[in-house]
Structure formats: structure tokens, C-alpha cells
Image (cartoon, rainbow, N blue to C red; front, side):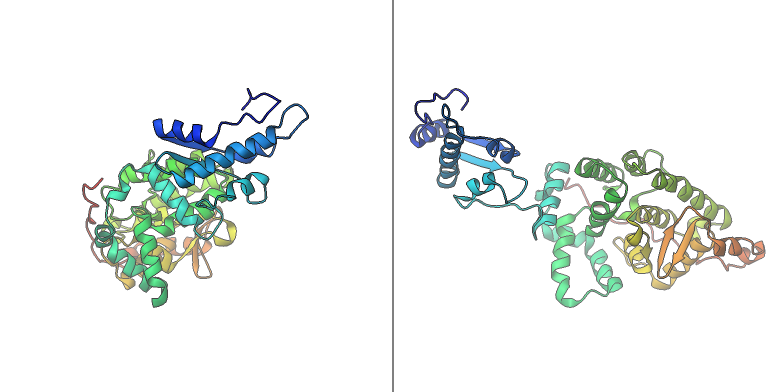
Length: 361
């Protein structure tokens, strides 16, 4: 366009451009289109705006009528610019990242960037892997029957990640910690799958393990700008050690100890008014291919809270805080003989290994 003369609008004709694309099919991506287009003006010497209008109009019509020859992808920041109105003239397919389908569109983009062959795993195969987790989610969250089909589709679409994990990371944790949006999210999700994806049928907040220094927690904390949140990892690790030291045979009596501490740590990083999690949410986090008994889980969580320094009950929510929990201190000062008598936790054995997603990947 910069070499066009000033005596006439020397824009290539549609016939010339169509012949060019027939010879070499092309995908043309115009990113931040309004930055260029809305800055153009006509002068006495050069009709920049008019030439650009005609050129984009020709490209749009070719892309609409001959999609095998030209794919035209244009990004604009909002729908209030001349650039957007120009592209709208040929009724394009709109992907609105702030519209009703924004979350679904972003999820597809993330999975496409994370996995080369995600679409090769069929919906029926995925549902066979995570069906029990979905059913338990409906039960624990008291999901209305009318909502279940839609939510089941969300689980299948988000696999191998749970949609409640994606929502937590995107809407709460990354915002509260001032992370760098999509870039940090992709890094976190990639590391999470690399370390857990072959062993877990679905990835949840419980997979953010605090006993592995090279795990996803490190990647997440690298993106944390707020030092207040950065201190939470050390405190959560101290609480994990305190519970392990206090409960003899904690691996057997508290089969979900590491999962619960990791989930509570991650959920405590969220925005203040939504930080922490209730009993049902934590129960969902630790549920994989088999249901977890309600009573055993309640006893296990209570035992962990009673033996933690910084884990608090706030109404119906559990949350890590910097200050110590005085109720937990009281329980920790009880005679050791109570721990020996079995007061401190369940005797149910660990559930064992969960199903593997298989070798589809």
C-alpha cells in the first residue's frame, strides 16, 4: 500500500487478487487491525483511508466467496471502531472473547496450544474416565437436573483439567496474584499435566502438591507479584509437616492429606471474598475415579484442621491465613494419649491408585 501513487487509487483488482490466491492459497492474519486502519486519513496527495477501505473490502469478499483460496483472520479490540465496522460489512464469523461463549473459546485455544492431538480423544472415552468424578460433583454440589447436561459437557470439553480448576485459576488466582494472564496459565497447566496427567483421570486443585519443590507450585509462585501470597507456600508446607508429625501413621489415617493441603493452599490465593473453600468443594477436589466416603472425608478434614497452625474455619469455608489458628493450638496441646486412642482421625485405608487416562496422548 505504501507504494501507491497519488493520482489514482491503484488498488489491485479482485480478479488479480483472486488469481494470486488461486495460485497460492493463503491465510492472512491482521492482528490489532484497528491500530493501523483507524490511524489512516485521506490527504490531498494520498487517499490512504479510501485505498485501505477498498483493499480490505476486496479481501473480505474473496475470503467469504472462496474460503479454499483465502482465510482472512482479523482481530480488533472492540466493536466501536471504524475497523470493526469495515470488517462487519461482509458478515464474518465472529469470535467474541468477551461474549457468552468467551470461556469456551478461550478453553479451546488453551487446549490447542497445550496439546497437539487433544481433539483425537473422543467424548465417550473421556466420559468413561471421569464419569464418577462428574457424578460426585453433581451430588456434592446439589446440581439441579436441568443443569447437569450442560455441566457434563463442560467437564468433557475441559479434560484433562477440571472446569472448576480452570475457573479457579483464570477468575481468581491469576487475578489475585497479578500473574501475566494466558502466558502464566499455559505454563502452569503444562507443568501440571506433565507431572500428574498420566496418573490422574482428571486434574484438580488437589494436584498442586507442596512436597515437590520442582512442581507446579514453583511455576505459579514465580508469577506471583504479591509477597503476601508468596508467604503462603512456606506456611502451608509447615502445616503439612505439623500434621504429619502429630498423627502417627498419617499416610494411612489421612490418605488425602497432601491433596487437601495443596487444594487449600491454592484456593487460599484467590480474591479475598472468595478465598478458601467449603467442604463440598474440597471433597470434589480429592475425588477422582472413585467416590470418597462422606463421613471418612469429614473426619479427615477435621483432623487436619485441628492439627494445623494456619488453617482456619471461616463460616462454612476453610482457608489458610498468616495468623495462627488458636483453636488448632488448643487441639495440639491435648495429651498424646488421645492420639494413640484413635481420636485424631479415620482408620479407613487409602483408596489406592486412580485410573490412568491411557495412551491416547
